[in-house]
Length: 586
Ligand code: TTP
Ligand code: MG
Image (cartoon, rainbow, N blue to C red):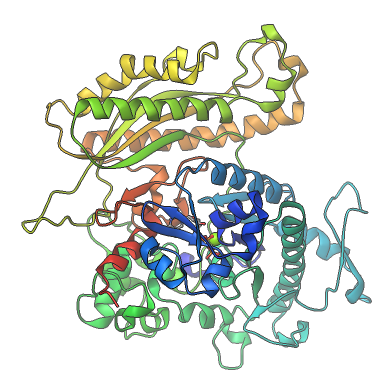
């Protein structure tokens, strides 16, 4: 069973910045650090610093309630995401700078996976086994003096399971011995990076170290905030006294909805099967323990295995290997790669959600705003900084990539029920229309606003009319304007002679992978348009069982408007948010 064979030859480190938006605001204004700080979007606390958490505040709380619990709370509006995006990008660049492979993948704004296998392998080969306690971790293959000293006899920082005295002797098989050595090195490297991140950039993170994205992400949560956790061997059941591996022991205690890769609908179906009844709407929080189903409950349930899971989860639209894949996830198997960093995004998309736009003039106003943001983002992200600084007056535009396709997508609000309420919908019922990007979008002679105005009048209005031919187009809850189908500019202009050859090769490499991705996305796009249902890379969490495709790297996180409080909630947080409103007042 291929999906059950875990590849434990890698070392992967997962970073999750602590109270990210609050930390960005604290970095701007350090006096906030000692105060309880909450970040507001509409009427919701989207995050708060740990001083506020100590005083009883938490993420996704109503502002009103936060003020009652902690009247001295400092509240700052965090609806403009620009500064969070910029810091996210810069911290990502900082962490990626440590890697040799460039395998550095961002998930949302505040998480990064690093595959450091090559660094670990290299440093393992350098170890002096007669004096492990005085080892040196080399960070640069070209320069043996760059690195840090460490004690290779023990893990750095906390581990799962916890142990005060863990050494290589704790493991039995050769495989686990080797794995322990690699993870020991990984734990020291993670600590070193965390220290540099804090000292040089002022940000702390919660970090997990293991052999896959799934395990490193989950294990980091064991010690929060500003800490790290290594999931230690044995990873195979045979090596442990009670025949349960540390991977199973660790995964077993998780509610199945917390396992990345098991989508919301799948989790609901599994819960219903195990509980022998419909699980209630959102069994995510501690409040609803009776509806929680742990991985252990599923794994040990009678006759459970890939075929049974296929019975439970299979059906129209489900992947054929969903049984095997889910069974693998329940055993901590995730062999997905940490994606290599791309020099340019595959697409840029800007969107906003609304309480329900009904009039064309309002739509046009929004199109103008969205198009202006899009042009500004293109100018920020697709123009090479270095080239811009070095360019002579007559050099003309210096775009590093040209998107070929302009796309407009919209989504309607779900219809009202008889009692006036609306159902929360997790299905991605967007419709979209695409066309070629007009040349003037790359003109730098005019302001972004002026280019946007032309784009609205020339293209977006007619695309919108084609999407919604009726004057009464219903109530829109979302508009998204995007440029996709990115083609990188490979030094084909007069500057090419001055270009860095290494950079050109790198660009060609990433061009090849971007091309594959672009084609896939295009296929999806056409299917989506035909069926009126667009699978959008930016909203991967919405699509069942594609948790790792959460967001395109530069996209504004996709949000859904909460009908109750009017907040824009990221899709990944929407379920918890809806539950929050559903819970009775206390
Ligand atoms: P999280 O990683 O969930 O939260 P966090 O980094 O603030 O806190 P923690 O220390 O527990 O990791 O989300 C990352 C950022 O995303 C967060 O700082 C604010 C934003 N966010 C929203 O905009 N809306 C939401 O509903 C949530 C949960 C987060
Ligand atoms: Mg975080």
